[in-house]
Image 1 (tube, rainbow, N blue to C red):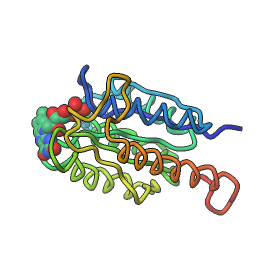
Image 2 (spheres, helix red, strand yellow):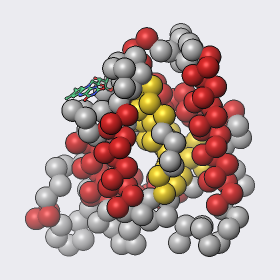
Image 3 (cartoon, helix red, strand yellow):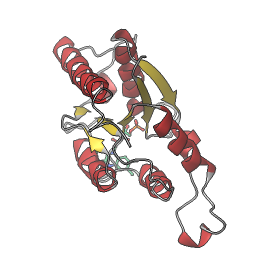
Image 4 (cartoon, rainbow, N blue to C red):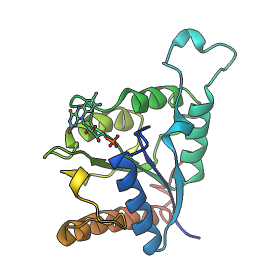
Length: 193
Ligand code: FNR
């Protein structure tokens, strides 16, 4: 059975650079024999978290959808913008809501983090912020993260990366992650509960 990857961008913006990077990740995964479940961040959008809303086992639709898509796949990949040196509120909000399900769906799931930004740092600081809640929840966040600098100039007309060295690094990063996720399916001790 093919290894399944939920891939999405944590940007709601139509012309999002992170969505471009997520689409490229999906393409590379498929080229290497993986199955992609591509999601739109809008499907995971939730009202601002408020514990007062948590009556009668209430969970917003966006969180229910995120939970389902995490559980339906072997791993998830987020291409996440950096806002003010951290992650956008929209992704933290859905992580908080989704963390309220029992069993807690992030536990022991593999994740790979990507970012794209017009800046020279490529939004990498946002990924260090995003690691914190995910690791807190028991997600196995892959050590190598990919951040695309000057992303507004990085893509060619087919959605690939103009810089071939960088394109190879991106591909290697994804393939290493795919191999880990694939291998972990065969070892019950590290398989998701
Ligand atoms: C930004 N941007 C930004 N970029 C960055 O590299 N570091 C940062 O700290 C910030 N901060 C920031 C705050 C806010 C409120 C906005 C709206 C933007 C710029 C950001 O990287 C750029 O808008 C990207 O294009 C956003 O990602 P998408 O929507 O293109 O995927």
